[in-house]
Length: 393
Image 1 (cartoon, rainbow, N blue to C red):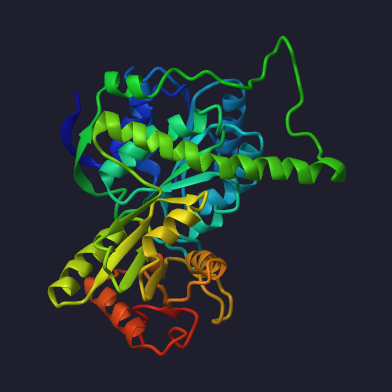
Image 2 (cartoon, helix red, strand yellow):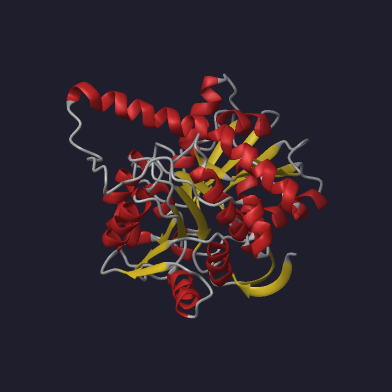
């Protein structure tokens, strides 16, 4: 039976990995994800988790070890963020192309320079074209649940793709929260023993990932793209089954007071909870405002997102990363949403705001200001394609 505990979210994430009976953990420390792999090393050293813990010399080596262990048929986990992800990214493309069901926690952190150990979504966006499934937790309970679901999704024979579980660094990873931790029997019922579909066999050696000449490369990429596209239906099935067993339902896109909203705030991650508080305050003042939260960023749930916002007159879209486009092209989340709306010939007023960069606070008052700015703007949107929030003069 599930047990309610008060625990740091990083520790809870590691415990969730332990409940999934992983075989291999490859780890290299980088703030703010280090507590996840540190606690996993303790679980292994103390005999609570029967797994190989591989301390490596870099993040590049961590993903190399994960690729080898997963290809050999082991249930495999790692964790990283920021500059660590940048170093391992060469191998992340290989992991997805080889269809290896690795699960990785990313404690989202800003990218240099200047050096920042605090949260934004630079690494999440850096990873968005790597071919991995990307899911995003808003609080500790969601991180635990999504970690368990991630193994089920990745290992589904119809998916066979690696999965990133994103959690905001420090603002979530280092918080102590009340969490319902499932017990081992519950997790085993939901997550069956891993049965690898493709694996290296010393008795029958093969070559994986050889050179792709021009006459095969396009087809290989199309096949990978189809796999990611088709994974959406399986993600929904896994979320539904998780909800039936554990009583906590997840969706590709989730809403808060958006049914009659004239203005919708679009968010991802723990900042969504601040946005919901701001919505409650604005509702008390008679403003019809709601929140739409993107739970799965890859594959992007275009139809589900459009259904969630189609009645709104105004959109406030948060991007928690700088794209350096020169001012007149939107941030990555906003760009995807504009594409969806253009394809469907739906043109609400849109304000794209860059907020929470490098861990800077975004307050309920900031959300109110963003909502008011878009609502007061002329048809066609606010003057610039994006605008920085909380910039000191």
